[in-house]
Amino acid sequence: MSEQNRKEDRQFNAIEMEVFSNRLLSITEEMGNTLIRSSFSSNIKERKDCSVAIFDAQGRLVVQAAHIPVHLGSLSGAVDAVMERYGVTGILPGDSYISNDPYLAGGSHAPDITVVTPIFWENQLRFFAANIGHHTDVGGGVPGSTSHLFKTVWEEGLRIPTMRIEREGQLDVDLLEMIAHNTREPEYRVHDIRAQIATNLKGVKLVHELVGRTGLEKLLSAIEDLLAYTERRLRTRISRLPAGSASFIETMDDDGLGGDPVEIRATVEARDGVLFVDFTGSGKQARGAFNMPRNALNASVYFAVKAMLDPYLMPNNGMFMPIVVTSPEGTITNPSFPAAVGARATTSQRVAGAVLGALGQLVPQGQAMASSNDVMPSMVFSGRRSDGKGSFVYLETLGGGSGARADMDGMDGIQVHITNTSNLPAEAMEIEYPLLVEEYGLVTDSGGAGTRRGGLGIVRQIRSLGDDIICSVRCDGGKFGALGLAGGLPGGKSRVFLNFGRENEEQIPNKVSGLHLSAGQSVRLETPGAGGTGYLRDALWLIWRKIFEAGRLPRMQPFEIMV
Figure 1: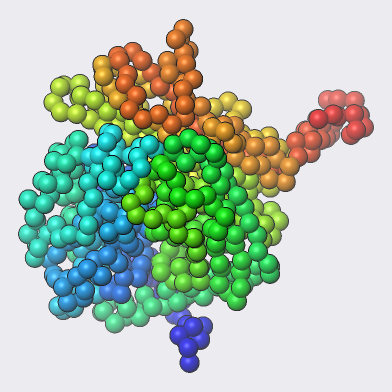
Figure 2 (figure 1 turned 180 degrees about the horizontal axis):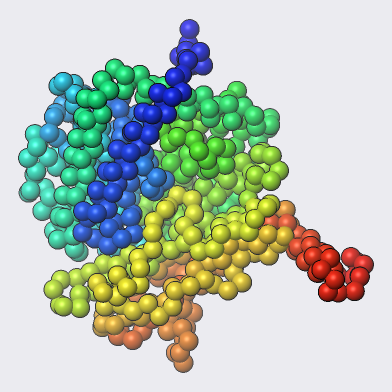
């Protein structure tokens, strides 16, 4: 009997499976809370730009907390890299491993540093605890270590292959300090990496307690049930899709260094319970840093499939099995070394949007949605601290509009798709950095019109309170608005201004790197809105009908309402 047939014939204990699923999820949630509470930098402690997960001894994802979807790629890649480099016999109790490199260690870009810790039971490797944190700086050519202008990974900061950061429980302080002092905020790096190690040790302790209460064999059996059930459930969803393929194209403004727009083309096809997702036809490898490593591509596809076909599906290895992702080498969705990848989040958003758009043509009418803002707006400010003691790097990624559905307007000002970070409260930012938030709100009329309008984008305007502050802004969507659905209009585009509202106001490019600000100067970013759903004339007809039914207008013929 084939492995697939065995999975299909497997009988599940639904109650036991649900109990263990929640127990494992509670472990990762407690790990995540530990990481957030104990971290030093605002990007992790305030914005929660981090993720945690548990893997089994085969490197299969067992459970991931509800943090950042794109981080799944780096977590899986890091665990695979540890197993490939050291092998089962070379992984020892008390070890922890650190990495970040997209080509050497399965990462997705340098600021995302991953720590992996093996979990042993009775001297046998059984699980891995893993977490990832986005560090605001890891060196490189600009504060924040990410610029659309970079052409190679060597410009993007420190490259960390898979390395032991702990040996038999002893921290390698030399390695830790080498990493920290190759960044612009060494103290933050030391404390945050220590927090990541401690978070995994918390996971080790909690898994040990679970095994001690339930027994190892019972836990392993429940995990096999979870993975098999998740796979079977997704295959069932896929098998209900109609025959044939569907394609959708998202268009980026450029490849980071200007030039022509870049297409992200996703083609999906369901066959025999397997979903094939192909990116043939996407733009060639970017000259700038918008290239997307393989693990980030996979994670973005997994998110989109889960969101469209089964939002409540458990995120584990079983979800990956029925999905086959292909992309030609040398394209923006499968770059060749040493292509820069630091700005890969924008491409990840476009990939997720393209897969959602393609699947929207196959699912029942009413489940599809218009395009969301599908970009990754970011602002980075750096300079001397207010007290003169060292430098700071402040990073913020912003939300935008969410696409309208057939029965509801799009949500305003939220993070969409592959990211899930909180905002940094203005009060926290102003206390910690020599910056002032002049405006923070929604961009008026930025949602695409329709029977249901698209969500509104965000405006954030920040003034420098110190001299020689360095600012970088990156926001795609300045040329093409988010697409509407079924006649809905596109969403508003992004814009960036210098000194908005003053005599010297100037609209500047949506992608700027290393902009020097003196005290009193401000930068304003307006993020894109989302597409609307349904023809505007239908919306006006509904409004007219409601007004007429309320007895407030004389009766008119529908054709008298002109759009």
